[in-house]
Amino acid sequence: MLHNVGMTRRSFLGATSTAAAFLGLGLVGCGGEKKPQEVTANTNATIAIANAYKTKNFHPSNTSSALACGTNWHVVEGLYGFDYRDYSIHKELAAEDEPTKVDDTTFEIALRKDAKFSDGTPVTADDVVKSFERCTAEGNIYIPMLAPIASIEKKNDTTVTVKTAYPFSLLKQRLAIVRIVPASMDDETLTTKPIGSGPWAYDKVDGEVQVTAKPNEHYNGSFKAGAGMMQWDVQVDATARKTAFSEGTDMIMESVPAEDVEGIKSAGAKVDTVQGFGLVFMMMNATKAPFDNVKVRQACRYALDVDKIISNTFSGQAAALSSYLPENHANFHKAATVYTHDVDKAKALLAEAGYTPGKITLSTTDADFVVSMSAQVQQDLEALGFKVEIQKNQSSAMYSAIDQDPQSYDIVLAPGDPSCFGNDPDLLMSWFYGNNTWTQKRTQWADDPKCKELQELMAKAVTKEGSEQQDIWNQCFDIIAEYAPLYPVVHKQVNTAYYEDKIADFKGIGTTGVYTVGAKAK
Image (cartoon, rainbow, N blue to C red; front, side, top):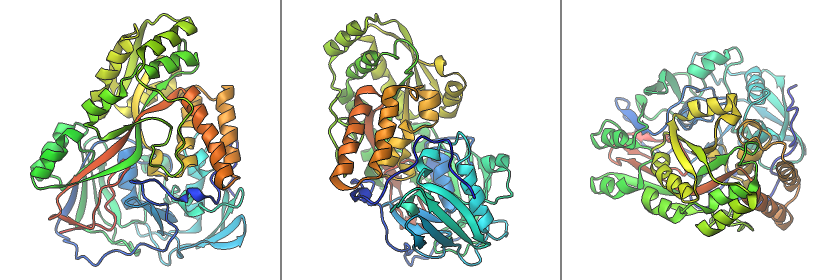
């Protein structure tokens, strides 16, 4: 039997009214299996995608890469999976739509009959157990999200028994995080070229240039591959991405810059714009002066001219913050602290902190929209007296350096989007504020009494329902806004372009990645 151990949070979201998600992220579904439409796929065609992110880590049990998560959706199944177009949940490797309930905290799940990995080996209960073990290994960033699942054990070769820490209505949604890979496969191989039981199988994997996949000849589920080949072209630079799409090299373009939307539409392509949770955040080290002083952190937030950022970088396609959640989220609560552009207040907070601004480094990822808005952030911070040097780096390299030496950075500006794993409030908070890498190694906030108070409130909230639960979550939102060294600057809308004459049954989604499961090349 496998157990989640060493966690401060023993529970997650229970049976609550929060199953309703916000506009753009869709509804957390609980219905039956999604049925593919009857569209004939062109097996001679390639579904080619211009992707906005790169990575070297495709490990299905620990990656947080937008590229890897997006490609793995097609290759590696869970017991259940999301349709990211509306966040409905459907069976993948599970044989039935619903787990068999033994008691309030015990469930049995049989595997799809004759399910095989792309190498032809059968999927067994041992693979499920081992995959859960990988996902909950010490230090894994998935641990807080999987806290409701106390254990997974083998009942027989084709059935697993799942025990939850408490009665829990969103079991299928959390199980969707656990992607099933062969128990015999080593971690190095899983990182570079994993195999799964999904409709696609990786062919060549280079997360900095191109990833290709071919149909999995052993797949016997409901979502057959919709083309003869799938190709993800890594184009971090927006201009290169647009060029590849405009010239027809790619039929789908991820993360279309707002200023390019109308031009792409006028050229004959379809652009889906979806409001999501995806954010750009500002992160500061809670143990490094001067950012160990909450007033300095607040001053840096009041300094930001967010309206100008939204106008200049996102052409209006983003929302300013009045809480951790966007205003159209079903559980939105306006935080007690709302950051507006107020230079005088920011300077007053610095004076109260007894700090005279000096030279600092603004570390950013190389995402185009982050690079674009970094100049405004630099200008806004320098208006307080800071001397700001911008250092741009690939996301994985930046975080690797921070994880090795958390005192090596001052301020980080970066994108984040845990909604690729789900969209209920507890999950969205747990990603950045759970007892994990973010609080332990990056913000260094884990030992702060306010962080511990927040985690205790989150653990309490998931045992409640209705207004009582919402009241506790509101306290969480207030703490995050006032004290957290990591807090969103904007919530982004997501633009995805595609050629309707080249692909059917496809829609853009409100999170990072491109979801083409069920789509067909024409």
